[in-house]
Amino acid sequence: MNAYAPGIVGSDMWDYNDRVWGGLLGTYEPGELMAEWIAGIPLGRAGTHDDIAHLLLFLASPEAEYITGQTINVDGGMFMN
Image (tube, rainbow, N blue to C red; front, side, top):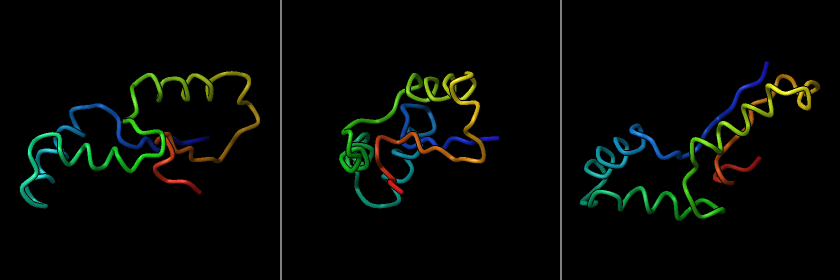
C-alpha cells in the first residue's frame, strides 16, 4: 500500500486556508498569502488536479508494481526528503 501527500493544489480547501489564515496572520488581501506560499515552491506554481491524478494513475499501473510502503510527496518540491 502507498500513500500520496499533496502540497498546495488549487481547491476550495486552499482558498479557505488563504482567506482564514490570511486574516489570522495579519492583513493579507485575498490571494496574497497563497502567493507567498506558492513563491516558496521550487517549481513556482501550485499543483493541479492533473498533477495528483498522474501520480495515482502511475501507482495503479503495472509499472509501479514493485513500489510499496511509500508516501510520495506531490508538491513541486515544497518538501524534499
